[in-house]
Figure 1 (cartoon, rainbow, N blue to C red):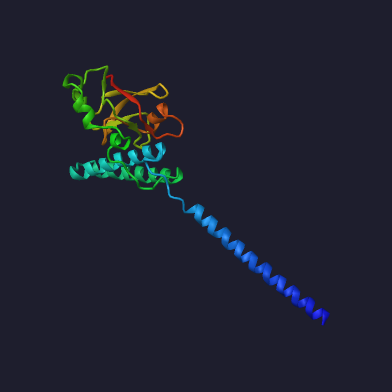
Figure 2: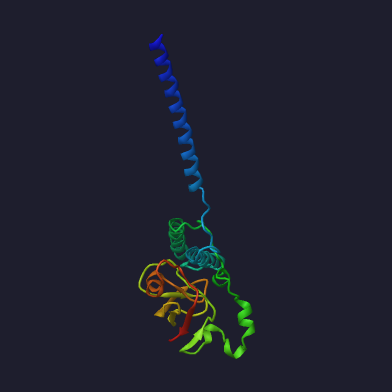
Length: 216
């Protein structure tokens, strides 16, 4: 009888330990799932996400323009920008941002008025960017982000023709780069990866305080 009682007690203890392990494991799984289910950051919550969303929006807007008014090079340009968009989405995921979030207007994404600021300034101080004289500040109030394109330092623009030289200064770190416009984009001044690296702050994909000057 004593031996049977001992065996019975051992079985009960084993069952209790197993039940506790299952309960503990379940609690661990629930906690892990809860942590993994945290919502990704949005452009409004993170400067990094804001810059990537702006870059994505600029490229999407460029593709829309190419599709609405195609030419002989549009297919190649669209394929290039689609590859850039795919890379930006990879960066969004790696940075904990909402993948696929885009900002169609870089100024609106930064919470800055675009048309209101221009309307409040006298016309003599705000000439069309493409008609600005060399050495004159242009695109006042614009933010600057990257296009995601590779190659030597360059810029793209929706206001300046190819061959125009622009000096872009990041007022937060006083770094500058002078680049030539080589292609069309959806914003006043969009830097490619190499040019953006010359003026960026570590870990940021958006320059909120930028000085853009036409120098040639």
